[in-house]
Length: 369
Length: 267
Image (cartoon, rainbow over all chains, first blue to last red; front, side, top):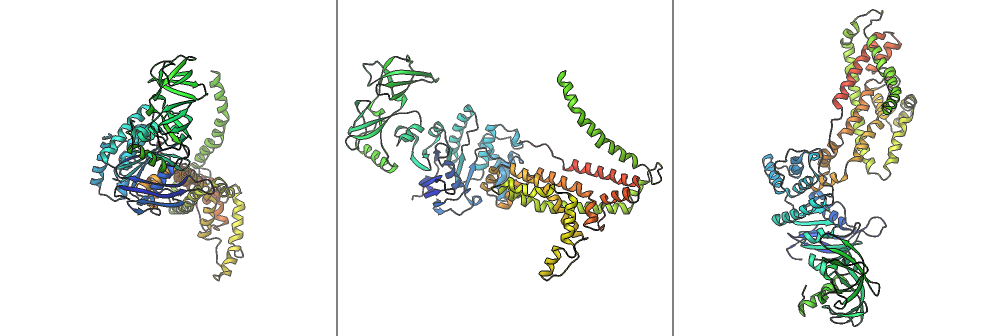
């Protein structure tokens, strides 16, 4: 453990009654001053991790460390973390000022100091001048900011955010994504952000943990996770993907759709069955002769920024293409892609093995992506 | 047009009911309060009400109603709180409410049996060596039985208020460093105050005019305004004085409703 580590989970399991565990033997480290995102579908255990850090629930097995101290039995009100709740959980009987001041008043801080700190926190979230408003007079976005101010005013080492943007409309959500990211940079506090929205996760995070069924599937930077998903779940959950079965013939050579292609992956056994991922935006529509794959256009949707074209090859594999060019439904087209666009996934590989294999690439060839 | 007409038709039973059973009796009480025992029109009843006898009675009514409300609240709040935390809370709530379906008189007689000289309570005191005590016809038994009778009415609104409380608010308070007690007195209690107010209303107001229990359980040692009204109507036949006390009771109740009434609150 380095000094940078602020939170550490060691083999943490959370289980209610006899059901299958919500969190299954999870270990990870959180570094100081970074923006982390716990990403996964509902019920994957991401909120449970947050509640364990906040102290609202106890681990069934395993240890949780904060700044090197075990905090399994430290009650929520004694922990150096503050939470921004999904529905904000602002106190309806208190006005904006008193909501933000709540934590400071509990610390028995002097009135003048409370006032200064609350005003500072409110101006941080662009709510200066709203001190005397009642919570019911605030819009969704404003409540969101009050909730953030209420958390940062206590100067915690870690702020936990439980799907804080999910109740906002799309435009406001995008705006708040920028603001939150900016706020985290200015404050330098560790943010742990929970969401099921992969775009949000990719846009905001330094580091993403992708969770499914109580296990961390993969952790890494947004780019790592997007470009090199470890398995079918991650590839599917993060963005749109074309996933087809294939076979690794040798290093840098893979077979799928009945053809062999150059690729940049290595370290597999000869003829090992694998899964291939190609992102829809990496596929380029071209003439049948020039294309590496020959497909028939099945349907087409206009998505604003691009067309989403669904097509099938002769083996019946579906290929999703994002293209600014329009295609004709029923027509045969060719699909072109670079060797770097192919991402090969080994079946049932653990994150550790996966990282090790990726590491070996960087030692050898330069990796274009 | 048609719609308005049907709405008015539906309104008739309600209007009739209010007129016959609310407005008319109130006017009658007011009317009777202006006649002395001989049937002459006078204001003597109102003058009499402000004599020490009646003022003391009013004070003692308030005092007992206050004690009954306070003790009910002290028992009901923690009970309601625990109920919201149980697994089958609706069932537990039902069990607490069921006794309120039983006739008041039956319950009063049951307590006479329990608190009597040869009742269960005294047998128990005998066994643990304290010996037989006078329990019935004391302030204690009066307040105990009254609290027992009123408690479901106090629990219900508080339970509802606690049940509606967003649990995230409690987590939020803890998250911001509040201990259990601070969370209670800064978040939980202020947010359930409306339930407490309605509970206090439905206990305090009837407790002011209790009369059956004062005789059966308190043995007429406790004279409340309710008892006085009953005595004037049934014993002394001074309907005028009885009505005057009733007028004051109505005014007092109205004032209490005003003071403890729900203020408008958002969210």
